[in-house]
Each structure stands twice: as structure tokens, then as C-alpha cells.
Length: 295
Image (cartoon, rainbow, N blue to C red; front, side, top):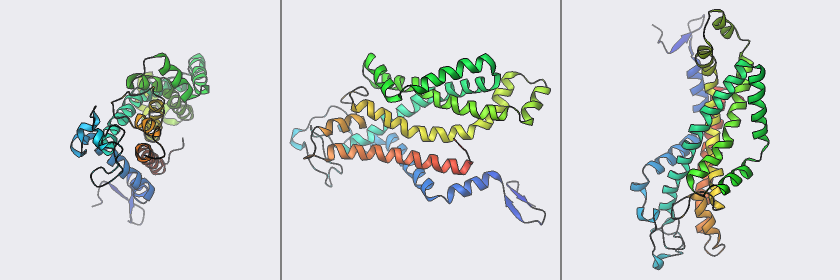
């Protein structure tokens, strides 16, 4: 008997389902596997930072002037900073801040943007005009400059940095979902649902939304790296997480004051940012190939 997860062609040869083919493409993509491994390692580092960090107290306001500016060695893999805190431990805790920002920003921006894109693409008319013209205006604004302006008006902290990024990030998802929905509106399954008397809510969330999930998943995986970069940029400029919070952007900013003599204080957190962004981008590219999505 043929297993339910497989299919057979006319000659009785076993073939793969679409899901199996997608996984096959992903598993044969070395870059995607590397990206997945990097993302998993970053998540593990963030979740288990209190147990993995050699010096958990370095995540706080520890001061050890006898050990300040120590170069990388076996005791401090990434060296110590200007007050003697272990940089490797602070990087692990810094991933908690970065991933928290990713979850906070995308957890709000993605549902909001997807909803607006669905409504604009489905209803059309004046609804489409209002939503998409407002989206175009927001897209025309330089994201980092707007985030800087918003964060400067509010008090500089991690929550306000998340708010500033969220206010701009929904636009990309609105544009993406709008384009997909407009392309799907003339498909037979949508027409059949209308003829059957399905409600607008049913068509939006039961018919159209499932066909957008793959594109949203790829976009989210790519966006995660950019959110980390934007958050680090705001922190670098003093508008994100404030000391002694172990934020990667703040660590790079503080370490840059001691270049080039104590190079590790800026380089190590910078490499940590690069590592996380590289992982999410490689994973996103792999998912795009696996799901055959065009963004």
C-alpha cells in the first residue's frame, strides 16, 4: 500500500508530495542549512544565557577595574570592556534584547500590515486608495531617519525604539499582501466562495490568507535580521537600550571609543550582530527557494 505521505505516477513509481519536495530543496541548500543552524544557535544563546554565560553578573552593572581592557584569552573569550565585564557573557544576554525586539516589532507590525493588505486588495475602490496611498507615503520616508526622529521625541529606551521601528515596518507587509491578494482575486476558488455565499471574513481569512502564509514566513525571516540591525543602529546612537543593559549596538558604540588599541570591545559585539543577521538572511533565502516565493 502506498504511504499517505507519498504519491505514485501512472507507472507505479513513487513520487514526492509538494511538502516533501520543498523540504528536499531546503535540505540540499547548504546556505539555508547554515542559516538555520546560526538562527538556532542565536536562539539557544538567548534562552540559556544565564547558564551559558561564563560571567552572568557581567550582564548587569558589575565593575572590575582590575580586569578592565583585557584582550581575548581562555578566561574571557571576547575580552573584557572598559569596566572589566566579560564581553562574551554580555553578547549572550545581548541576543535576548535583540530577539525580544524582533518578537515585539514583528509581532505587531506583521499582523497589522497583513490585515491592511488583505482589506485593500480584497475590497478595492476607495478602501484600496486610502490604505495604499497612506502606505506609499510611509514607504517614501527614510526608515532609519524616521525611527531616529520618533525615538528622539520619546525618551530613549528599548520600548520606544521598538515603537519607532514598528510604526514603519508594517508598510512592507501591507504592500506584499496587497500584491498577492490582487493577483488571487480572479482565481476560481475565490469566485466559487463568492457564488457559494461565503462572507467577506471567510474569504479573507479562510481562502486568501492561507495563500499568503508562505510569503509572510519568508518575509518575516528576512525582516528579523533587518530589525536587529535597526535596533543596533538606534542603540549605537544612544536612542535604544540604555546602559547597563547588554545591548549589542550600545556595546559597539562604547567600544568604538577605545579603538584601535582595545579593538575587541567594538569588534566582538559587531561580529555578533553580523552573525545573527547573516543567519536570518541565509534562512530567509533558503525558505524562499523551498517555498518558491517571489517577494
